[in-house]
Length: 167
Image (cartoon, rainbow, N blue to C red; front, side, top):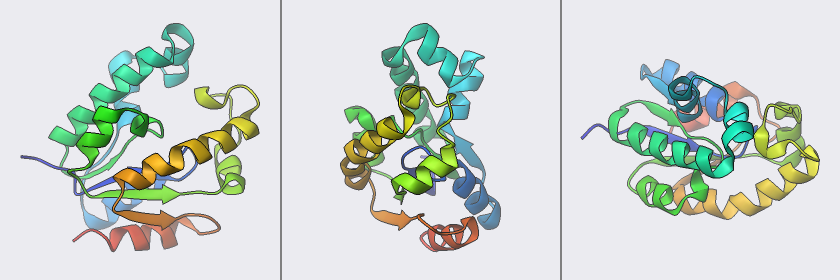
């Protein structure tokens, strides 16, 4: 069975894509991001899917994309920030080496720029981001064997720590 060497979870702005791509490049593994998989399969952005079809439809696409990637990908995998909301996805993640990239509100807000292209942050982005961080933290912690703090740290420092957990 093909399995990711590492799965990254965390909130928007935690650095899952940036850190994941850098860890994969450093260690010579392919990198995959389930948000990109969804956009490629749908032929449109996640924001457009949320707007046109709603969050429940997007979450179903996400659940399928994560299940497929966990089954087929043998490198470093980044899953969308909301993937852990799905109980079946959490159960699938239990069989993998999962790293939770934790991030504080100030860093997350700076990194996402409170951008309008983040559909779950579209209204009152700072308050929604704070609520999202608090609500999802226990879910990220429940699926991850390892937590790596990203607050006030550069990408290289985070990549060093995450890469050290691949073995």
